[in-house]
Length: 90
Image (tube, rainbow, N blue to C red; front, side, top):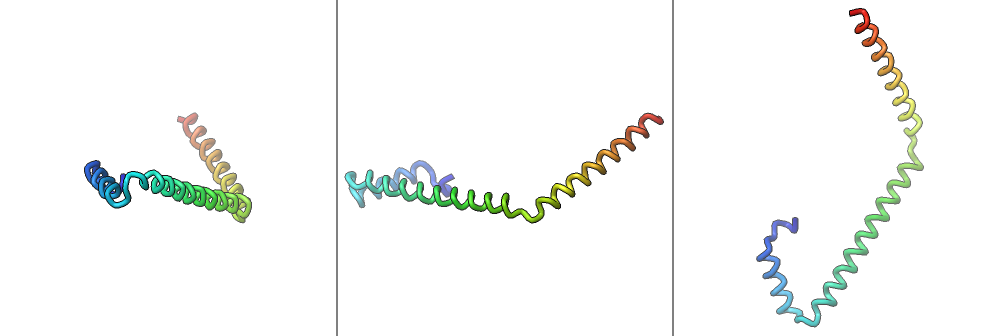
């Protein structure tokens, strides 16, 4: 979505960059930009993985979450049994 930039505007920006830096510098500029983008992507992936590891290993409510889920499942089963018995009576 390139911040609402149309194709003509991108071509114009590329033309200005070509005039300022010259044709011989553009590949090195693109290479350095790609390297920077890859470094940022790798850093964000590392941060995400660290957050996920810390959530999985240090989840203090993990036991409570399972216990709560078991209780909810038990209530659902009781409710299903009740509705089944009502349906049979009708």
